[in-house]
Length: 264
Image (cartoon, rainbow, N blue to C red; front, top):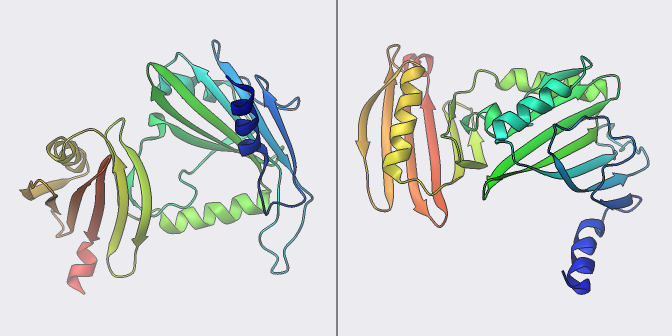
């Protein structure tokens, strides 16, 4: 790599306008000295970015700046095996946390497909791990954020409020990028689904997943640009999914009507 490329990549990592007061450290091939995790065998550490800031409480008593560590690694292990190895290496102080951080229902990836998070009340750290497969190698990012017990309880309460929202697990290899949703009157979710699968393949996978949750497919229309399908439950609920073909995948929208919403 040319020296100019190295300088550019380092600058992109370490220069963050607006984050005044942060101290940033980039380590090539290393984790920070106090990194509290054991990595599975055959894990190659590409490097880490550490950001530290003063603990500042905002006037409204809410948001505060915190320490942040991001570690990038490669491993020959499949994503599921790598995540399982990480979980096995965690001490009893780590407890599973919900993912994603702001659940909104709708389309989700499975926990073993590439994402999980844990909280350590003793260290007051939230660990988030994201992985993806690229050319036979699992690329993973491990993020450690300073997270107080109070913040964790607030987050858990927020998750509990959303636990009843309808979710549909997408097939392996499909990425999910949410960009809208709601739960007033009718649950809805809008996402970008990154995939090379066809609309037919996606709806076949969706229908299998829906059937496992007790929903029966009632109609399906496959078009070159827009496709849709609908399911119903024995209690009278309805789920409608629409996919619009876009570059790199589909823009998806899900609308869910509960039986109790129909009755009222």
